Length: 209
Ligand code: SF4
Image (cartoon, rainbow, N blue to C red; front, top):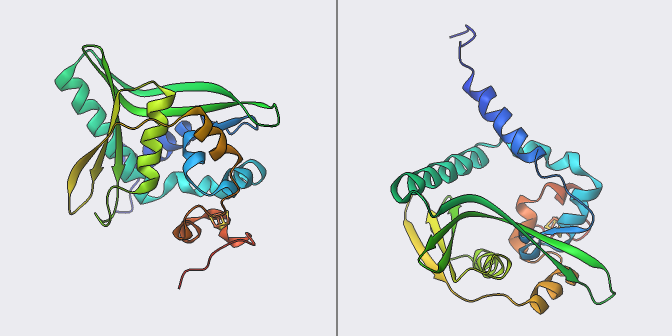
């Protein structure tokens, strides 16, 4: 105690999280798949006040989630070998009703190729197994099915109470994606405000009881 460790693991985890975040800066003409399943204002705030979300890169919950992701990705790769791709990035251009062209970008945790089928795997960690699967996760999986042209996505939940999976075969349409981009649903879910970095300034905050 009190001595400097020869190997500073906390610093290493911090550096990895920071590097990961810096690889994906926000761009005005790009919508992430995650933007389409949450409060529309959060993306606008992130473009305007990026520093307010920076502390999120080092929260224990975030680090735990990252490690579970890495663990399952490596496990699948070591068991199944070829055919397993991780952190797969994809993008598609869509045209909005006002004629503006924007990019929809997403990163699938895992894509597995089995014969001619492409299967996505989306890993979710949570504190509890209450009300699974979450609607925003099912929507995210449906949009990944559209973005990567996947046959299906398996939503895997790793929680202290339950490790379980749900199959999502439905695929979003381009019209749905455009309508989500132009949506002004603020917040999309009432509970979002409780966990939002911008609740300290947002006039639309729904206070929790
Ligand atoms: S506080 Fe609520 S309404 Fe405001 S940006 Fe955050 S999630 Fe959206």
